[in-house]
Length: 58
Image (tube, rainbow, N blue to C red):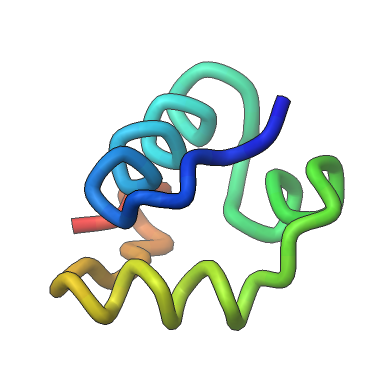
């Protein structure tokens, strides 16, 4: 499963994956072979930051 390229759709997809399948962002990125820095950069470009304590982007 490839993550969406649109940042807003990506935001929703990542949070759903974090909620349903992964304990943290590192586990998601490792399992899906996603560059964490690039993912965070893309989501921060539309105002979202990873909140480790909540395990979600906000």
